[in-house]
Length: 194
Image (cartoon, rainbow, N blue to C red; front, side, top):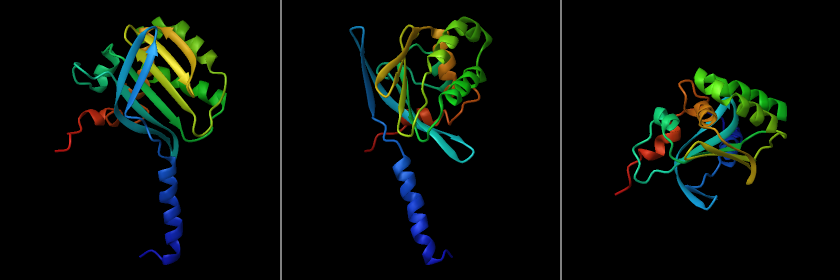
């Protein structure tokens, strides 16, 4: 039995978890080059290293009139989709570059790495600042392999490179993902309430 004096500490821990939890929107809309991309929330997960939450992540996809998504289909399917990362802690620029450099190779197919080599270098070189708790990073993968990255609502990187888009998404949807890839699609299988 827990002593009564432990209750305030437990309440603080649960309150902190609530404060840390990101509230992800149920849809994302992007207007780009005269096109409107409407993406629906498919699920969320978190990147945890040891016991530390680095970021929470949500996945979005164009789901109307499209076949169901599986983790494997996410990498092969050319539908528009997005990943939103909500950082829970501060990270320096070198740490971010290092983690992306490792993560892009974690689930890579050799052909993707070879095809995207120049884009990988430009992407890593373009990371020019660290993040603080509360920052948001959004990756959009649009039809045709177009990729757009936004940091706190501002465009940070853009490229048309399907191999790089697959490498990037493989961080979270590859065979050895950095978070729970099934949870990133769990919202698709939810049954509507009667």
